[in-house]
Image (cartoon, rainbow, N blue to C red; front, top):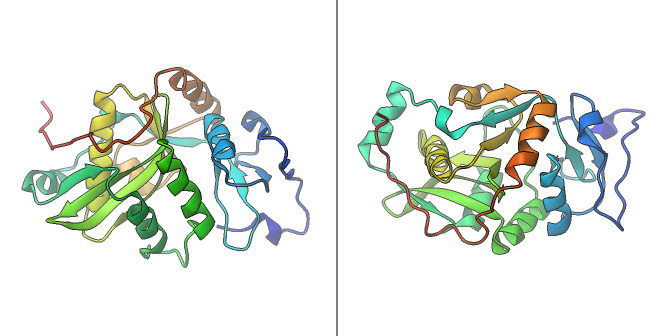
Length: 245
């Protein structure tokens, strides 16, 4: 990710330390950079996500706040299972749990190398902030185990009937996809409107995620946030793969 501070001039406003207000994301550039500064307090983060805004920045930069146009969403019923992945799901060699190892998941997401990336945006302050949100019942993890070993997973936030996906990791082939499939199935059964995947990647599009205009996303987000939240631990959530009819 390039830093806005690489440019000689920029017109991105700083956030106030005394309020949690953000610029209106509908008027942001397509790139989506809205503001910088502030903090990663739970109140500010929850306010941001409710407005379709998320933090993303490099080590050493101020906190940068984004709401890109377009947005990438996965509607749970539209998850695509290809033949090769179906064989993985049928094998039964992986077990999925929710909220049993959140701190481990976020640390793996921060440290497991990714092709084409030289570092991670999940800096220590970000890890601490999302672990705090997990303890408060807003942030959740999906973990994939092979026997008793954690080999894949993802984490994000849930409010209303939307899940804000943040990051995933794999220590074995396809295990992040297993976590994502489990999340999609469980949230679909619970009436969630969509999973916010933030920005387009070919990988997520291949799993069924759709690119939508930011205005449509913000409208759908507003509606989803009016619905009841599943606040608290998700350790009681369960998933086993079932063939689609």
